[in-house]
Image (cartoon, rainbow, N blue to C red):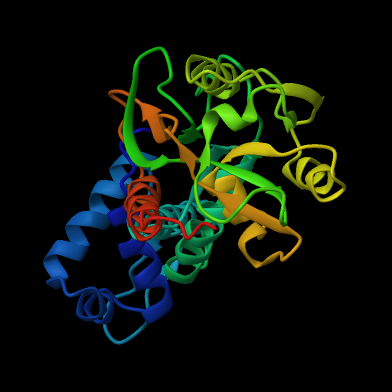
Length: 301
């Protein structure tokens, strides 16, 4: 019955609960004639009377047909109320958001984004996935952090430049910047040749240094453990260094390189032309604010 309207069912429920058209009209803020017209329209749609109207002071009562209509009508009204509530919560920033991330962002930027989203919108559902593919795809993600632009129909916001620094065992190099050519032939541990790593190693080679890579792993903690063990030094971006707590570790030292390498660029991506949820829009705003707070020059040895 496509002609049944929720306002007709709401009027019917009010009459059944109040026992009269007049009291139902007062409760709903309508005139009594308006309520009567709504019930008449409902009765035409269902093809029969939904109330017996005895007249006088006696309360109106549901007919057998009316009982059936009201029983199902209350279910529809409850679902409509739940829908309205869900829409209101969605517009206020609740709902679900799916975010793709990678190790450095997961450790430094994303915790602040997640914490602030949850503080502002306790009912939000945040889903995170972490991987570092060579050719990242947004897929069904709402947002994707990546250290570089992403191909396809994608919009992006550059969050920050992430400078490369040298991490070495304490005392391995004098305090201050380390000339890039000092790394020529030196043992080094490094990330696998994915994402921005090949580009960084090519920049080192253009600077006149060809380190001896003795170990590769994608896990920052493992790389730094090998630096502590004396296996070699590492050239890592500042976010990775900060996220691993290196500045507070007296077994390690952090040095600028001279000349410096071009920084890694951190971007936040989303699907072009897609209407974003309020939660996704707020996540972008927070990510930009957090990144801006991280753009101070890092303290190095």
